[in-house]
Length: 259
Image (cartoon, rainbow, N blue to C red; front, side, top):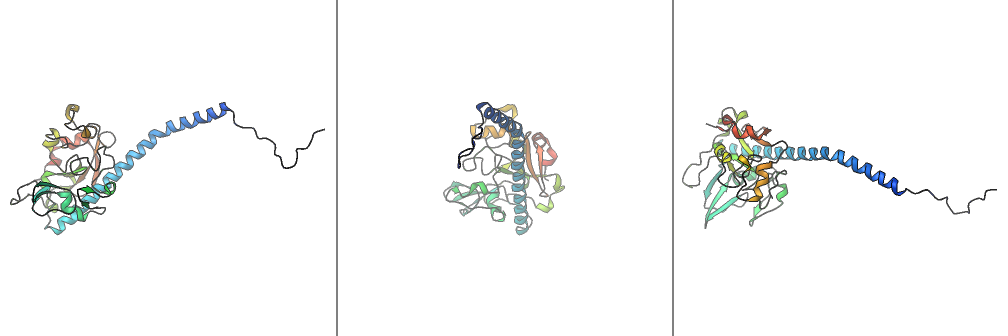
């Protein structure tokens, strides 16, 4: 005769054996290994999209700047005796400042954050920092992670001379002319990125012969690139963005040329 279980006591439930636990862990590890490449690709794509969005916001800011400045784009850099209060700038000498295009157009950027007291506030949210760049946002690339085509922004560090910026609406075939790039410097030229004179003069993913840069912190960005398959995000003069193979960016002379 079977005895009934005492009141208030439950029949014991079989536990997992060690082998069963190891099998479950192995299955989970296999699933993770299968999913990781897809997750990595999704993360890379998300960073690329955020980067393009940054550039489109900068393009909108440049367009607004041009509207308020007789159609002219912000200069790549110019000298000023008035200390800037926002954006990026360089103290060239006491009372003389080199002001970059990011500073000139900063107030027009949607996600602009002040640059004060020599340190950036909330740098991760600043529109001119690429989330895919391995170079740090605070001590990283030479004034942001994006550069302007010098043929559009001009370059003139003498305060009495015209920086020779282009009028945005006067650029011929704007849909095929480079305006902004993923870059290590705030201003870039085709000759500059083909043969960098300084470590930050580069387009990510292009380094002739994989030559070590002067400063190691730029090497990964200049050799390995930021975006998948050595692609570069580019904003054209009509303010549309594209992800473009780095070789196209470097060697397409017509897209660089802005008469």
